[in-house]
Image (cartoon, one colour):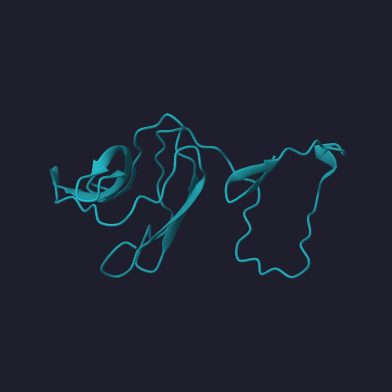
Length: 145
């Protein structure tokens, strides 16, 4: 399957056995900023440790995904060892932003010592159901961006 902007362009039937493929090349008038080779699908819910210093300042976490067509919401939590949630990132398709009357909201929050903080909901909803996305969570010195 060939995809562009996480949307299917066209299926292309294999003309060679996949086991014979060993290389790829890119040439021409293009600036390539990122290449991801291979990949693995992870079951949801999924939880994993972060190697080394974890998500220390200056580091980032890059995720690729696609909200389910009938999905209502999903969340990504950045956790501390003690279970506190440093960042709860929660796109919600099933809520309306009251002030603007728009469908969907991205809620951000923290859970510290079993107490939720104040929800942040500013900004537009960038996610669409059944449309692929990439999300980078950058840990800056004083905030996640």
